[in-house]
Length: 317
Ligand code: SF4
Image 1 (cartoon, rainbow, N blue to C red):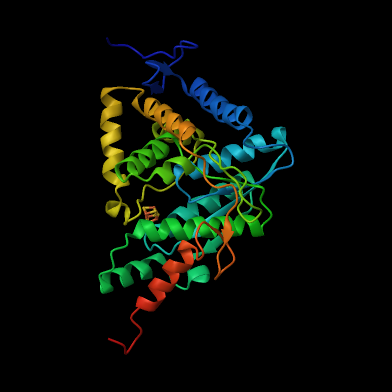
Image 2 (cartoon, helix red, strand yellow; image 1 turned 180 degrees about the vertical axis):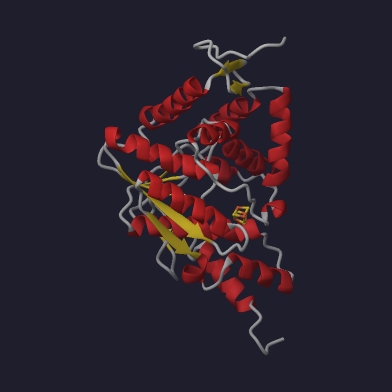
């Protein structure tokens, strides 16, 4: 073909190809298209309302930084407050770099960030937990421990800091990957739970919202590059143990062959969620820590007890 590829809106030099539209956009119109969809998600689905105090769960990766950036950008005109909560799991060679990127963006856009740590909450870092699992041959994956502890830490910090909503950076790819994993594991409860927003379920559980729910991961990456939102390209060393890893590659390959696949899978997921019974409205409180749970003792307390009792103390073997 030759020559410069042109934006289909203005005819300027294109910088992003939106494969499911089959169209190219220049940086200006791509940013406009991106931000318009995130704002429409917030307003059409009433994810936030004037007077809300929104905590953004920020890991320091591109998705959560973009969420923090956009929530800050929309906060004044939409009348809500925003601040960040980060969880330091204690993953050496990874988390410290991501937290630095987060601190830098938070300073730039003027947002406060609170940091909760696994060590303070559970008595050990994720690296220490993984060492315990390895030494004792326990069959729990790092991401399982990480996910349970992080959900607990985020909800607790958000509630204690007075948040009325907890926004996470989950994008379209995350949603489709989790749906596919829930399908292969036959986790019907997981399919029902993982939507655009959670319904209020008791005052100790802060409702969650996902402003990037309809945005493909590739577009989040393009947005951060255009906006200059920087994060180091380091990956968590434990990602290779997660089923999500192959699932992500598989879905990306299909999307490359058949653009729009991820949106179609998301539509199927929503269909399932509409016909399956909804999750229970009220949660019980954990007998040990008093946090909301669907079991008498929450998963975080169970795992904490399991890990601390299995830990090798010096002199013991
Ligand atoms: Fe946690 Fe797994 Fe994500 Fe690493 S890849 S941060 S262990 S959930």
